Image 1 (cartoon, rainbow, N blue to C red):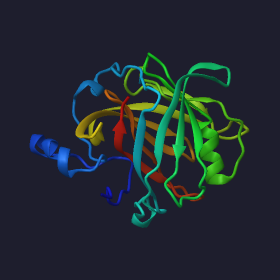
Image 2: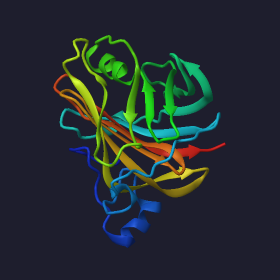
Image 3: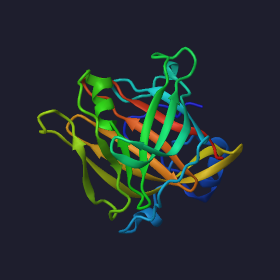
Image 4: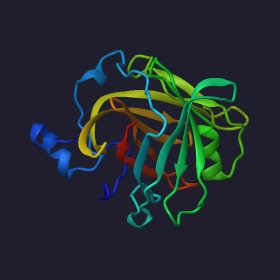
Length: 244
């Protein structure tokens, strides 16, 4: 089911307990509830994400048009499969390597390898995140680095530097953990499940990216990059998770 047209990085609110229960069967993973739960406290409670080799995550994906509406005809179902959780890569250990496989017929058709570091503190590093965004959107080649895309070790609404967005170092991508509590739905090991997610906002002059994660079960729930004058964005929401 398409999550519908979206103008901003916020998700539609779920009204009350009845709406919350109805999420399980009727709502897409894009629905969230704001509140004063654990994520609203001054200190985050997200633990380190722990995956196992063989875990798979299947997403519903859409392109966004220049006004940040989802393009229904662009729907795809990319798959992430955890290859290893103890790799060493780019001078770092405890690296989780994930093979991203596009759906049949997608362009480009080849698979890609994503590298993450999920620290026990809750911080998340992704290798080459900024470089990949710039290469996809603007064709700019920037040296890849370990970019800190989430910092749950910091208090709510604390800001950190993810990295520089241009070779001159003039534009800085900064991150903030949004304090609102969110609930999402996904099929976890074959069972429709309500999952608690935490939202991270990554913003620079030219990038507006939202990441939503869960540590129980560990999963990336949402990736959304808003459109800019130079390139359209995209939206991915977790459809199913298989844990080993």
